Image (tube, rainbow, N blue to C red; front, side, top):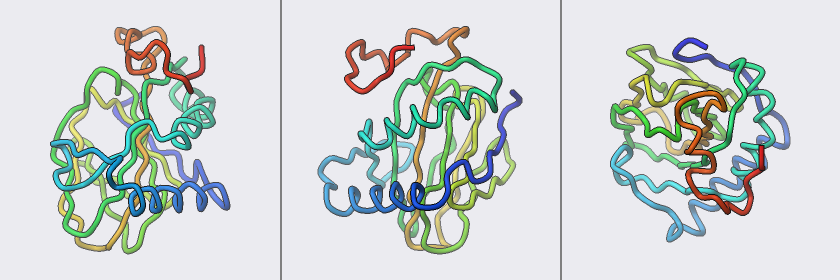
Length: 179
């Protein structure tokens, strides 16, 4: 796999609608469960949401097929961005060796994510697969919309240097598959 690839419409239809509505509702109803991180200041993120964990397992065969790698799930995260939000330029931690950014739902125009100075445009249901630890990625201020739900699914190469990060180093992660 090169630095990144795109899988158009990895999700569609009612499943995409269900997961996008779920993300919007969790962000609206259960904001106390959200956490802030320095990469997206003032934007709550939600770690290890049960539906996103199931989505990670559900999409794993498609991600393995696209990358040509045997992968181990590490963790999931989602955010619902709002107008004015940014994603700082960064590289990810070792549990994000292979990262997926999946556009779940948006109100407004496409908000590009940048990978090594290339603007990537994702429609609802499109997945961007990239080497999170290796490539810089970011988003400029969100000015063309009001709300965007984005899921992040993370994996490590089963034959790579970060296998200890399987399940994000939580040996009893209750919803993780044993692979």
